[in-house]
Length: 136
View (tube, helix red, strand yellow):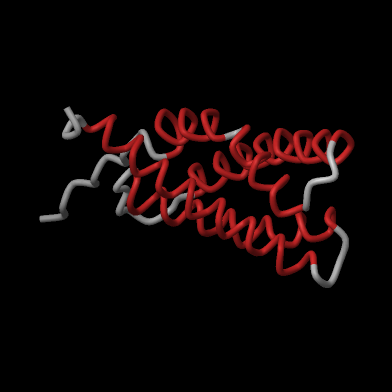
């Protein structure tokens, strides 16, 4: 049962999600010591997104070819949508609770995980480039 490729990908995606969420929350906590919650959220986002891209590309989806413009463009578009979802949840949690920013950031991250898995599986890392024929 656990050898089915989709189950393995989902398990890896969950591990990556947990690791990236921990990184994002940790950076939010660290930056939150120097700036407000909103600024900490923005500062923690880029390094977390880079970690997310790399771990999913190489480990979750085992995509070993170099990143191409299509992949990067689609990933950036997906991140923009995911960011809007996360920011919306973050702001709603901030308005409704008095929770620390790092916790709100982690919960907001969970809100967009299903979307990112589907987009990465079907679009970004779902199509493998066709190898070019060798020259004689």
